[in-house]
Amino acid sequence: MTVKNEVEMVDAPEEEVNFDVYPFLKERQTKAPQQLRQYYVRFEELYDKKLWHQLTVALTAFLAEPESAGHLFPLYENFIRDWKFKMNKLSLVKFLTRASKEAAGPKEALEFLGKQAKGLKATSPDAYVLATMEKASYELAVNDLTACKKDIDECEKILDDLPVTEPVINASFYRVAADYYKAKFAYPQYYHNALLFLSSVSLDELSVAEQQSRAYELAISALLGEGVYNFGELLQHSILDSLKGTPFDWLRQLLLCFNSGDMEAFERISRTPEFVKERFLMEKTPFLRQKLCLMTLIEAVFKRSKESRGRMSFAEISAETKVTLDEVEHLVMKALSLGLIKGKIDEVDQIVAVTWVQPRVLDKSQIGTIRDRLTEWSGKVKSRVVALESEDGAAEMFAQ
Image (cartoon, rainbow, N blue to C red; front, side, top):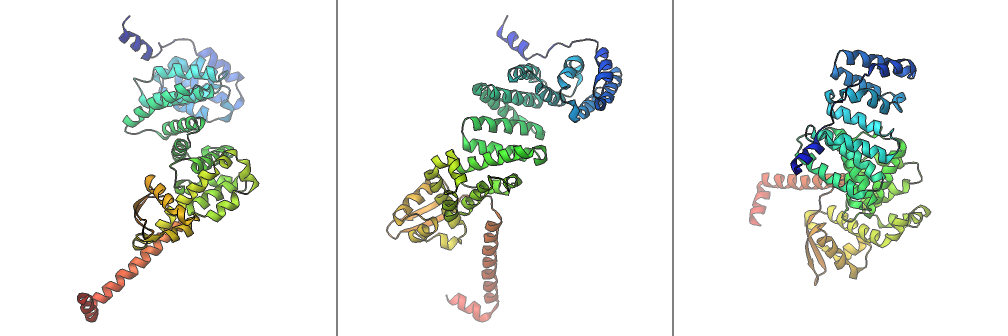
């Protein structure tokens, strides 16, 4: 057997199986929970008429019934398996994903979804990605991180080539990718993928407990993530509201003080029992202080006009960032090396000239700063126009 033939056999879909589905449907019409019996009657009618699209729609409605839990795997084995090749592939994978939760354990679910995914690669790339990513979630469950990363990399390439995808596929990809990076303690990558996951789902789809868990993990990853110096996108997301009134509301307040560069608030929160209990934060306190100093420097630059940020003295930076005068140069050099700002340092006159600051997602107070600066600029333009319209003003300006 050639290598080519082996590959073709692996990628080929399963052979269609023909068996009598009617005894199963008849039995479920009398023995299933009352709320589900009508569906089995409907399944039989549509199957008999070979109305595959309508049958898929009815199956989707069946999935939405809370009572359907526990009935999906038998339904697949005794009914859907007979006509699944007539079914919309994405709808099939959505059903298989739900059915996999009824397997005996994660290893069995992994084997089940892995077998189903193989036949989809050539015929339906988007359905293949969904099936593969759901399979990868079980690889995480059995601690096979290598296989999970391989699936993530493969699916990322496929998604890059697809012109458009359904939100459920993006949500599955980013959820599993975030969980993988969480297992690897890769905070920046987790932060990035977790935010993209939230952009692909509605918060109503997540339980309150899951919202709180994700808000907590996002807050920790934002604080500890190297290279994450702007929390604006997270602070604007309503998922943080899930922490209000909980024992972790202080985390939301901590994010706010970092975003605004409030060193005093950080020192106050870092002495609370809640902060002390967070071992990862306690161990990284020096890193957090340096990160806050850098974010305070960014905020100090941002709120200044173009003219004033071109001549920031070491003393001004020291006062705003709460670092000693002899540490200012090192702090600015760190910000320059990280690409947070661009500019020059005048060591002799102890002046920093900033020409660019990293773009950021703004909160309401920062938008207010821009509004004030635009108002100031508008006033200056108006006064110049008035001066030009005046003969005395025009003569004075040309004389200068």
